[in-house]
Length: 377
Image (cartoon, rainbow, N blue to C red):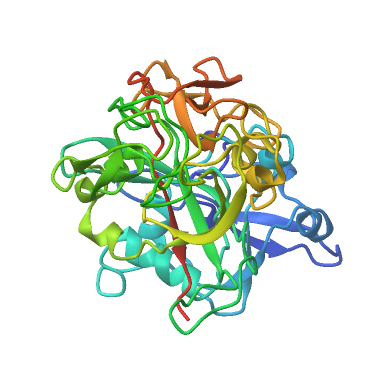
């Protein structure tokens, strides 16, 4: 029998070694399932409780004759290999379908989206790691591996609630960003224009790309002059949001941000000049700070940087290199930040991984599919 790491961490059963504090011995790992025989696990990789705590690894107790997760205090279960790889910045994430199937029955949570929403409601992130993903098959047959980009990255952030808007503070949440880009190429705007409009002062929220992402009908810029002429754009049938499974759409929450504004009626601006608290539509793209952790080609003003936090998935690595579709060749992709020093460009990530910017009308770029699932009030 082979010695290997478990593919389903919740199935690892460990028991304390008598007289040896903070150490455990292996009883069984990877219990048989789907025709696969269980295999022993190398006990040298078992972490002490102290090390596990330092890495932020939950130590859960459970007893289940089937080796499946059951929150009844008894035997110890731990996440092992993922934590080591995360600490070394080499963790690539696993498909969460296995964990979902090992934890629940159809009568409890009929879909993986119901399950992850319930986990967030319970504030239970055990065995969930940044980089792990949910495979999402769109209605038009496109596979998106939606990775956990950050857990509670923006918790407690935000403006004060108003009678009209249940805004903040941001509650317990997970933000997902697809491992690769959606295969469809798209421009930010049909013209080289990176200011806001009379529809919205935010360059990103005023853009045509935002309508494409969210299957919207709205007026978009159709000229490069100050307070440009507008044209109607209708993506209700061809946009991306409406291709997602209905079960996923129903659990997506708005993402609350203080977003840069670049608009003054009658003027064509080359840098951001203010900011506003806004709810993003269900699907969005990251801003420069959320990817690089600092400003690059965006506006040098604090408005462009002060409201964002780098997602852990992009920290100390090149995870920003994304394919054109699942496993596809490397692709350039859009960011939500308008470029600084001009009125024509938006920031982007190059197919080689370096920071970039390009004309808003460049129709060769792609986008990752990003969304938030948040705890209810």
